[in-house]
Length: 252
Image 1 (tube, helix red, strand yellow):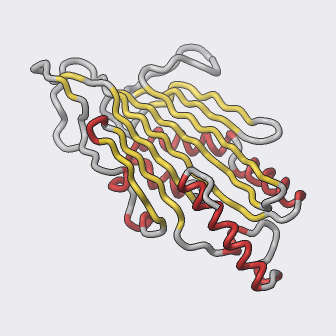
Image 2: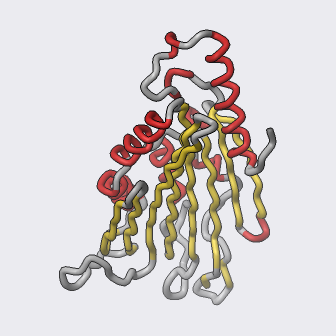
């Protein structure tokens, strides 16, 4: 971000990142689909999600005020972390507290359809910060924390703050694309597209994995147990599913 801006009082800009990933899997039988959901639930329960979000909080230089987490029946989990830019200690032994400036949340959505043999797992992470800190620096960590086949990201800077001369500032750091904050090693694995509204400080990026190793998408099935025609059909189904999720509409 370069040299710090000289502001009058507190930095009132709000920087909000919405980070969504989709993991797609082929599970042929109803039992395999249920087992996949159970596996995802155990792999991404509220305890692990809490660890991911607390690491994210450390990365942006914020302090955890309080944590609220919940696992759901039959599936899914949610975690909310209240954070502050400065060092603050919540009073009392409470499970939920008011936040000073910012928050981080995560929700998971495992689902499957018995007729398509495809199961998907969606993770929604929202980071809202006020002041100088921005969550864009955490994107590499978030992408690598999940099996990310499709990724959609929205970043928006809202409000305004003032410099010492009273001039309004609607942006305090340079952003041309969310992709600029993702490492080249990660970007080369994905097809990526931007939709940005620069005048409104709104940035959108979506990404879809380029190469599919079929074995990584089969749940409790070895790829060599399947005849070539079946492998091709599964690959086509996986790719169609990803394209529709990436596009946000029904194509096939």
